[in-house]
Length: 302
Image 1 (spheres, rainbow, N blue to C red):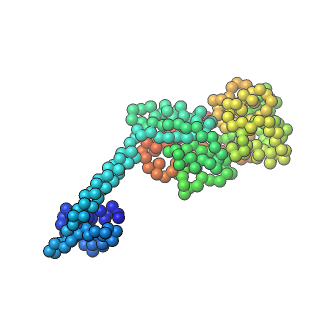
Image 2 (cartoon, rainbow, N blue to C red):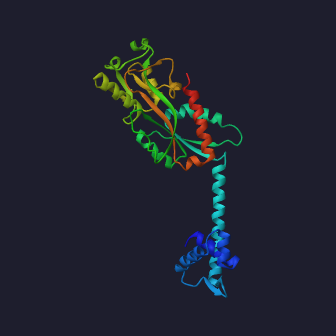
Image 3 (cartoon, rainbow, N blue to C red):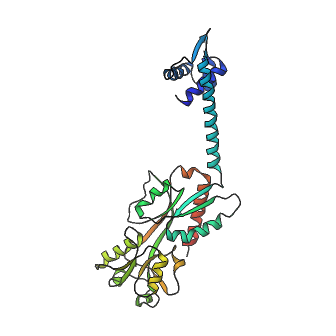
C-alpha cells in the first residue's frame, strides 16, 4: 500500500470516475486503473464497484479513502514542518570541536551570531583521533576536524567538507632555551631533545614521528598529553619541548613559552568543517558554517 495509491482512491471517491481522476492527477486512465488493481491485491474486501459506466467506491473503499486522506494530511503537515525547520535561520545547530579549536573559535563564533534571529549554536567537546571525525557527523550538525597533509582525505561520499585553515604546528620552547634564539628550526636541531607530545593518532605525535624520521634519532618522549594548556605549562617548566598549533593554541601560551617554525618536514594540518549532505540543506547550518569560516580567517590572519 503506497501513498500514491491512497491518493488515487481518495480522488476516485471525490470525482467519481477513473477518467476524472486521471485528468486531475495528470496521468493516463490506464495508470489509474493499474494502481487501483495493485492496491486491491493487498486488500481482502472489494474497494470499488461498477455503477453504470463509472467506477465508484464500496463502503470498505470509502473507509480506506478516509484513512488515506488522514495519512496524506499528516504527510503534508510533516513536509511543512520539515520545510520550516530547514528554512529557519534561527534553529539550533550542534557543533562539535576538538579542544584547541573550541578554545579558539567558539567564543568568536558566538559574537558573530549575536543578531536577533541568528542561529543558536550548541557546542560539544570531541577530542578524537583523525580517522574518527567523519563518524561524528551522525551525532552533530557540524564537526570541526583536523588531519595532517599526508593523512587520508575525508570520505567524499559520506561528508561535505569545507576547508577552514591550513595550520602549521610549531615547536614550543622555554623562553630561555638555547634554540629560542633561532628564527626557524630543522629536525637536526631537535635530535637530542626531550618531549611532551600528544597520544598517537593526533597531529603533534605525527609531527614528532616525522622529525625522528628525518633526523634519524628516536624521540625521547617524557609525557603524553593532548591538552595544549598543560603542554605549555610543562614546556614553561624547562624540562621538555612541545609541538603546538600556531593559530588555535596561541591563547594558552604564557610569556615563558615561545613558538618557532619548523622547516624540512610536512608539519601542517588541515582544519575542516565536516557535515552530512542533508545537514547542509538547512539554512541555520549554512549560516553557522559561513560564520565559522569568517572567524577562522580572522584567527589565522597575521
